[in-house]
Amino acid sequence: MKPLRATLIAASLSLFLAMPAVADRGDKHYYGDNKMEHKIGKRLGRQYHRIEHGIDRDRLTYKEARILKKRLRKIRRLSREYREDGYLSRKEFRRLTRKLDNNSDLIQAFIHNGIERYVIYHDKYAKNRDRWEY
Image (cartoon, rainbow, N blue to C red; front, top):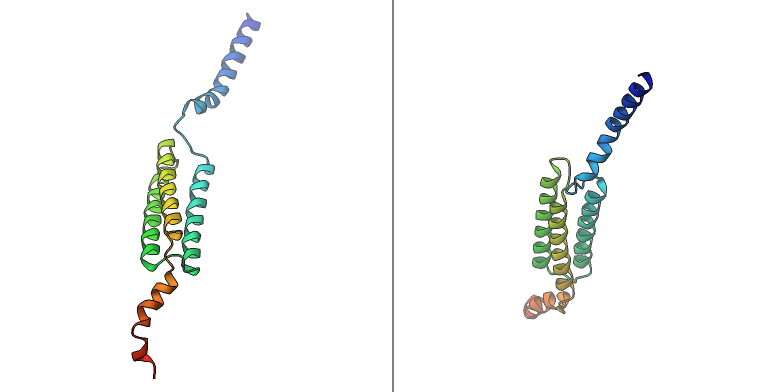
């Protein structure tokens, strides 16, 4: 009777210890690790630097930069809301990724839309240049 009892106790103990590992794998909608949150944070940072770089290189107008930064703030705010409960679900991750992709495409379109910002800015004031020269 003792060997049977020891076997049953050992089997139940091993099942009891293995339960958390099995339960964790069954939740397919859980992206609780920091990798996904870190990816979103890195992308937000890269896009912000792309916008700043476009401003510094006169590839973005003030209005375009304002639009892009406003969209980026909304995405950052949404990311913070999603992380409040402690984890990022797949649905939330996909939604943030889609929004970041759309914003990245818009940055690309604004930077490469063929408008020379420096010339436009100075041509606007060049019309009145004669009046300001002494």
